[in-house]
Image (tube, rainbow, N blue to C red; front, side):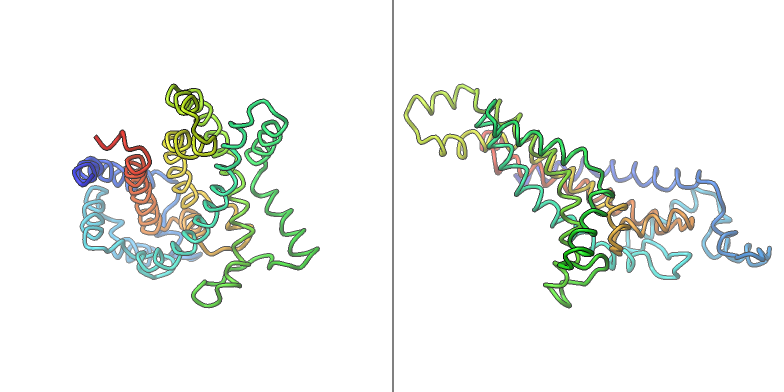
Length: 313
């Protein structure tokens, strides 16, 4: 396993380099000048020139890129031109919020999607199978913004059970933190649960039709043991891949949900940075997100080996 991890890490290094080049190069194609935006309405040429010199915007793009990479290698992601804070501090402030939200959403999606997919496959073509498929289709088709607004109206405005917006750290008040994040987490986990259910159902149907399952049944093994121990373990391989990718998507794509529930997370940070042409923040956030995607893929590879012993060879 350690040799596999080492090989994956070596293979991922060129990916990070290519991603960093794309991050740095493509954002310079965006219209607008960050120095002009920061200079304000007067747009004094001397102020604009000073801003350009301060943030190396007057230098060629390759020079800017290598200076940025040099800083990244020592943990310096640059400084926000708008907030005047180190990007690493902003990431450290916002990333835990989105991580908590994404983790809760994935737990909800797994608790709903995987059991529903197994039940649907075991009870194929029954009324229960049709009900589960309809519910999963509803989860996939429902827009997050609509579901979020409806949940706010029901649980906050009408019933008064949960706060409509805001965020409280779990280190300050765990119960209030749960109350402020459970609705956005369910909104995000709802759609993923539908996708997980469909993939789990397809993988389980394939596994249940395999020769080793028929052999296990011929030997008279207990049916729940056949389903959970033999079929499910082999069916989880594609589900692990999907779960890793969906978790990475949550880290970078929860923008709309965070806006609806006023969650100060990663998504809101990058949207504000793009609108304000805050290059350093965009570069830092996208780089961290890309590295997280790569790490999740590595963890998925390890998960394959732990779930399926045949892959250990």
